[in-house]
Every structure is written in C-alpha cells, then in structure tokens.
Amino acid sequence: MDRYQEIKQQRSDLVAGICATIRARGRHINQPRKAVIYALVSQQQAMTAEALWLGIRATHKISISAVYSNLNLLVEEGVVEKMQDDDAKSTYQVKTSFKVHGQQSN
Image (tube, rainbow, N blue to C red):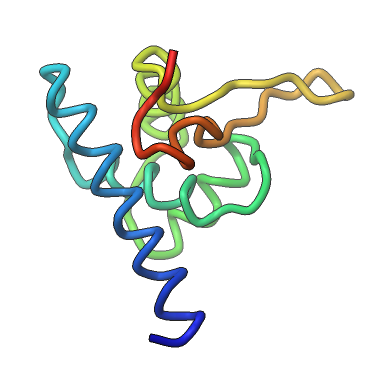
C-alpha cells in the first residue's frame, strides 16, 4: 500500500471510530455530522468553523449553523477540542488522544 492509500485508510478508520463513539453514546450520525467529522479529520491543523464550512459546502448542502451545532456536539462528546487563537477566534480539531488511540483517553 502506498503512502497516499495509508493516509486515506487512516482517515477512514478515524472517521469510523468517531462515528462509532458518537453512536455508542446514543447520538445519530447524519450526513451533515459525518461531513463535519470528515472535514475535521482531513485537516492538519485546527480550523475555524467558518473555514470548515467553506470546505464542506463545496460538496454538501450544509448551513453554518449546522456546522457550529455539530462542532459543539463533538466538543461535548469529548472527541473534538475547541481552542481560542490569538485573535480570540475559536478553532477546532480532533483531540490528539483520539487520533492516537482511536478513542478518548481520560
């Protein structure tokens, strides 16, 4: 398997792991939620909700409010980390502990 295929498989596995975690906590995985999860997993750095939305809306019909509500749910469920940058803008990324272990470690 070449490096591109490995990265693609790792992202797919991480998306599946996040979805399984959310489902195990009684939440549903709909298309907008999965699109937000996939967008987060595909990023190498923390992103603003607006930047994620701009990327997602190229392929999915989704509102900025749906992006925010899904990000808030993912933060609440402990999968995503919300941070403030120097300009006091909120940025989001999948928690490092989740990326490394496939689940949140407390």
